[in-house]
Amino acid sequence: MKKFTLPIRFGIAASGSLIGYFLLLSLFDFHTNIFFSLFNGVITGFAIYEAIRYRRIEEGSNFNYTKGFSTGIVTGFTATIIFTVFFTLYATEINPEFLANLSKAWFKNFDFEAIVFFTIAIMGFATTLVLTLTFMQLFKSSSNAIKK
Image (cartoon, rainbow, N blue to C red):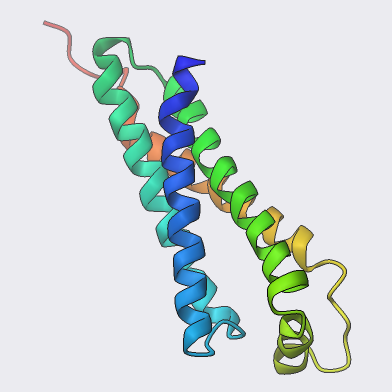
């Protein structure tokens, strides 16, 4: 369980940042503009990068691709699951008109309310996978290094 505490902490911090960003957008009524959700990737990416970096520092010479990859995946999936639960509660309990307003603003004559939560989760999982694979290219040790 000790190996999951770091990525879960970073995942919780990332989800808190995602929720805070969403609520900040909702104060200015920008939360129905889907282009602002692109910044969610920056927030999630920063958390994944930092979690992998801290894991590498903790492990030292024992750090390998598998440890870094699992750290990134657990971090991103934790953030995605928590944010999706929050988004579901927000859209169904806190602001029930949100999905209808979002649908009217971007998808005329299309009722997408049933699939929006699934879409949020899939976007988060896909972002996590792509960013983790990308960051691991930075953190993996090269097999082409010259041995002395």
